[in-house]
Image (cartoon, rainbow, N blue to C red):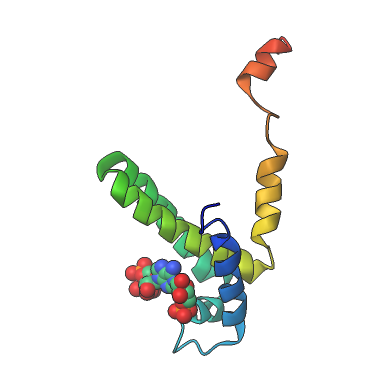
Amino acid sequence: MNRNSDILDRLHAVAEERKSADPSASYVAKLHAKGVGKIAQKVGEEGVETALAAVSEGREKVVEESADLLFHLIVLWSHLGITPGEVLEALAAREGVSGLAEKAARGE
Ligand SMILES: N=c1c2ncn([C@@H]3O[C@H](COP(=O)(O)OP(=O)(O)OP(=O)(O)O)[C@@H](O)[C@H]3O)c2ncn1[C@@H]1O[C@H](COP(=O)(O)O)[C@@H](O)[C@H]1O
Protein backbone atom coordinates (compact mmCIF):
# COMPACT_ATOMS: atom_id res chain seq x y z
CA MET A 1 0.00 0.00 0.00
CA ASN A 2 1.16 3.57 -0.71
CA ARG A 3 2.80 4.90 2.48
CA ASN A 4 0.85 8.16 2.02
CA SER A 5 -2.56 6.49 1.88
CA ASP A 6 -3.41 7.85 5.33
CA ILE A 7 -1.99 11.34 4.84
CA LEU A 8 -5.45 12.96 5.02
CA ASP A 9 -5.99 11.45 8.47
CA ARG A 10 -2.45 12.34 9.62
CA LEU A 11 -2.80 15.99 8.56
CA HIS A 12 -6.29 16.13 10.07
CA ALA A 13 -4.86 14.90 13.39
CA VAL A 14 -2.24 17.68 13.25
CA ALA A 15 -4.95 20.24 12.46
CA GLU A 16 -6.94 19.01 15.49
CA GLU A 17 -3.88 19.33 17.76
CA ARG A 18 -3.23 22.86 16.49
CA LYS A 19 -6.62 24.06 17.80
CA SER A 20 -4.92 24.47 21.18
CA ALA A 21 -1.49 25.55 19.91
CA ASP A 22 0.15 28.99 19.94
CA PRO A 23 -0.80 30.92 16.74
CA SER A 24 2.59 32.65 16.76
CA ALA A 25 4.36 29.27 16.51
CA SER A 26 2.08 27.39 14.10
CA TYR A 27 0.59 28.29 10.71
CA VAL A 28 -2.40 25.97 11.28
CA ALA A 29 -3.03 27.42 14.76
CA LYS A 30 -2.94 30.89 13.17
CA LEU A 31 -5.59 29.84 10.66
CA HIS A 32 -7.83 28.39 13.41
CA ALA A 33 -7.42 31.62 15.41
CA LYS A 34 -8.40 33.77 12.41
CA GLY A 35 -11.56 31.74 11.91
CA VAL A 36 -13.69 30.18 9.21
CA GLY A 37 -13.71 33.29 6.99
CA LYS A 38 -9.91 33.32 6.64
CA ILE A 39 -9.68 29.55 6.15
CA ALA A 40 -12.44 29.63 3.53
CA GLN A 41 -10.63 32.47 1.77
CA LYS A 42 -7.45 30.37 1.62
CA VAL A 43 -9.39 27.40 0.19
CA GLY A 44 -10.84 29.70 -2.48
CA GLU A 45 -7.44 31.16 -3.35
CA GLU A 46 -5.78 27.76 -3.58
CA GLY A 47 -8.65 26.47 -5.75
CA VAL A 48 -8.24 29.36 -8.16
CA GLU A 49 -4.45 28.88 -8.20
CA THR A 50 -4.92 25.19 -9.01
CA ALA A 51 -7.27 26.02 -11.88
CA LEU A 52 -4.94 28.71 -13.25
CA ALA A 53 -1.98 26.30 -13.04
CA ALA A 54 -3.97 23.75 -15.04
CA VAL A 55 -4.54 26.10 -17.96
CA SER A 56 -1.22 27.94 -18.00
CA GLU A 57 1.53 26.41 -15.87
CA GLY A 58 1.74 22.68 -16.45
CA ARG A 59 1.33 19.50 -14.44
CA GLU A 60 4.10 20.01 -11.83
CA LYS A 61 2.55 23.30 -10.72
CA VAL A 62 -0.89 21.64 -10.66
CA VAL A 63 0.51 18.99 -8.30
CA GLU A 64 1.93 21.68 -5.96
CA GLU A 65 -1.23 23.80 -6.00
CA SER A 66 -3.40 20.72 -5.49
CA ALA A 67 -1.38 19.87 -2.36
CA ASP A 68 -1.92 23.44 -1.08
CA LEU A 69 -5.64 23.13 -1.79
CA LEU A 70 -6.00 19.76 -0.04
CA PHE A 71 -4.02 21.00 2.95
CA HIS A 72 -6.22 24.06 3.41
CA LEU A 73 -9.37 21.95 2.88
CA ILE A 74 -8.24 19.65 5.71
CA VAL A 75 -7.79 22.68 7.99
CA LEU A 76 -11.29 23.86 7.01
CA TRP A 77 -12.79 20.42 7.75
CA SER A 78 -11.02 20.34 11.12
CA HIS A 79 -12.23 23.84 11.97
CA LEU A 80 -15.84 22.81 11.22
CA GLY A 81 -15.64 19.44 13.00
CA ILE A 82 -15.67 17.41 9.76
CA THR A 83 -13.42 14.34 9.41
CA PRO A 84 -11.74 13.18 6.18
CA GLY A 85 -13.71 9.94 6.60
CA GLU A 86 -17.00 11.82 6.24
CA VAL A 87 -15.86 13.42 2.97
CA LEU A 88 -14.57 10.11 1.60
CA GLU A 89 -17.89 8.47 2.54
CA ALA A 90 -19.78 11.16 0.63
CA LEU A 91 -17.53 10.59 -2.39
CA ALA A 92 -17.87 6.80 -2.22
CA ALA A 93 -21.65 7.05 -1.89
CA ARG A 94 -21.76 8.62 -5.36
CA GLU A 95 -20.01 5.73 -7.07
CA GLY A 96 -22.08 4.82 -10.11
CA VAL A 97 -24.98 7.11 -9.25
CA SER A 98 -24.63 9.52 -12.15
CA GLY A 99 -22.64 7.66 -14.78
CA LEU A 100 -23.78 8.57 -18.28
CA ALA A 101 -23.51 4.92 -19.38
CA GLU A 102 -25.82 3.78 -16.58
CA LYS A 103 -28.31 6.56 -17.44
CA ALA A 104 -28.24 5.64 -21.13
CA ALA A 105 -28.83 1.97 -20.26
CA ARG A 106 -31.92 3.03 -18.31
CA GLY A 107 -33.07 5.18 -21.25
CA GLU A 108 -32.79 8.42 -19.28
N1 LIG B 1 1.24 21.40 4.43
C1 LIG B 1 1.45 22.44 5.05
C2 LIG B 1 1.53 23.70 4.38
N2 LIG B 1 1.43 24.02 3.08
C3 LIG B 1 1.56 25.35 3.06
N3 LIG B 1 1.78 25.86 4.28
C4 LIG B 1 1.97 27.25 4.68
O1 LIG B 1 0.93 27.94 4.05
C5 LIG B 1 1.32 29.29 3.93
C6 LIG B 1 0.82 29.72 2.58
O2 LIG B 1 1.45 30.86 2.24
P1 LIG B 1 0.65 31.99 1.52
O3 LIG B 1 1.65 32.87 0.87
O4 LIG B 1 -0.43 31.40 0.67
O5 LIG B 1 -0.07 32.71 2.72
P2 LIG B 1 0.56 33.54 3.91
O6 LIG B 1 1.96 33.97 3.59
O7 LIG B 1 0.40 32.78 5.19
O8 LIG B 1 -0.32 34.83 3.94
P3 LIG B 1 -1.90 34.89 4.03
O9 LIG B 1 -2.37 35.19 2.65
O10 LIG B 1 -2.43 33.58 4.53
O11 LIG B 1 -2.21 35.98 5.03
C7 LIG B 1 2.82 29.35 4.13
O12 LIG B 1 3.10 30.00 5.34
C8 LIG B 1 3.24 27.89 4.19
O13 LIG B 1 4.28 27.67 5.13
C9 LIG B 1 1.74 24.86 5.14
N4 LIG B 1 1.89 24.84 6.50
C10 LIG B 1 1.80 23.64 7.13
N5 LIG B 1 1.60 22.45 6.44
C11 LIG B 1 1.46 21.19 7.18
O14 LIG B 1 0.90 21.48 8.45
C12 LIG B 1 1.76 20.98 9.47
C13 LIG B 1 1.64 21.85 10.70
O15 LIG B 1 2.15 23.15 10.44
P4 LIG B 1 2.28 24.19 11.65
O16 LIG B 1 0.90 24.43 12.14
O17 LIG B 1 2.90 25.43 11.08
O18 LIG B 1 3.14 23.56 12.69
C14 LIG B 1 3.15 20.96 8.83
O19 LIG B 1 3.99 20.03 9.46
C15 LIG B 1 2.82 20.53 7.41
O20 LIG B 1 2.63 19.13 7.35
